[in-house]
Image 1 (cartoon, rainbow, N blue to C red):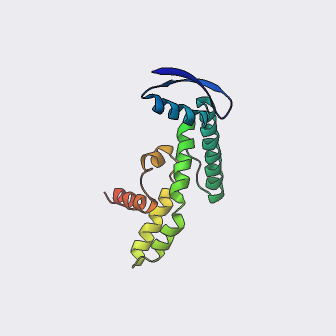
Image 2 (cartoon, one colour):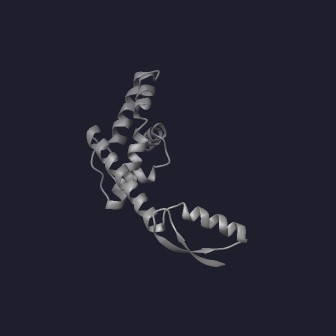
Image 3 (cartoon, rainbow, N blue to C red):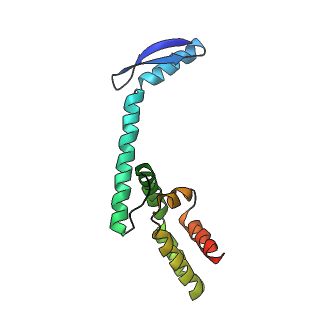
Length: 145
């Protein structure tokens, strides 16, 4: 193992433990030199997350969605999840409109309205892996039981 001070592309120096064969350590050192130091990288990620959260918050306000409840971290995360899930809302509405009977359309429309009205951050976080159409199906199942 070799401890080397690497000057990153951002101009900051950082000590890294480089292991393995000499050629592997050289390649790793070159790669590290072309990347940001850990502090600048984290600042970049934080800025991207803040921008995404602000965009999600604006979209929610413009769409008339309710404000989310929970801790600050939960709300920030849930807003982004909700924004990503709701990106497909127009497609879901189109599918609802093509449902074969009025009862199915009414049920799906009601389920969509109730999903959109969810204001708990935990709801969006717990369902983050579902696409909107599956959320509606799950929501409808839970209401039937």
